[in-house]
Length: 374
Image (cartoon, rainbow, N blue to C red; front, side):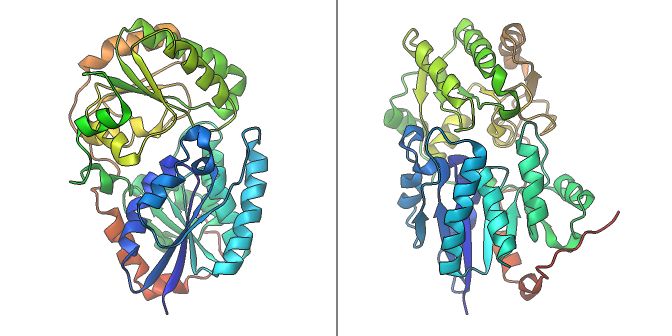
């Protein structure tokens, strides 16, 4: 019998991570892939990115609105648990796949583990700042299987008491897409989004939920510094964590008063990759600056604490959320090396994932987890 596998996606970012895994299962005779689409995907303010998933032609898509704009993270968690619980009871999946460190992933891990469904966590064992670390490690402890980016991540999970043989280093699945021959050309991207700049950088900044009281100051310092640089910027909305409204308001204020800012609620994943590949640099606190950009040799300025400890690379400047520090970083970024760095896999994650799923032993894992002492 075919195994039913449910993937959960709540943001444009996690969809980019799981897309290649979904793609490789589409024509499989052994597995039936389903995708539970929720979170930011369902919000028009953030680009209604569920349409991007629909365009991929997946056979089994279920859309669920789990929030309104005023909901806090705990409320979103509760709503997602309620909706996903009903869904899995109908689908009866053999495995539930979640990614990363968002509350939707936590909801998926909770629902799966409490319903005796194998939970597979993509990109556990990473470290960063803010609330993300707490959620990511919690998801790992609720998961039975771990598909990690590298050996460092595997060792962290072993420190958390996870079973060695249930941890599979496969790289980051979005690397599979970075060098796809199907990526659009830069001219296509610029024409589609109306980007007028010949040369540009990317600004992508998310609120730090544990520093929400300081978000207004942080984004004000950042925007003032990038405007002062007199460079062109393609700016993409933040995620919908607490504090995002203040960031969006600041972008709106600046966009009205300068021709060097073009602001977008969201961007198709393939189009974003082409844009990133050809950027002068990326600035903000997105994981894209530390995970995807190095593969293209694109320098990055990582601001604040959101990605603390994620990576220490020669192509990245880490700086405080202060005007002077950001201004100095922008002035220094041209001197950074533009050599590609492969540190999260080699672009074959989906093939490794598929091969692992074909192992009979994988499906015999005891759903009663045990803690492994060091």
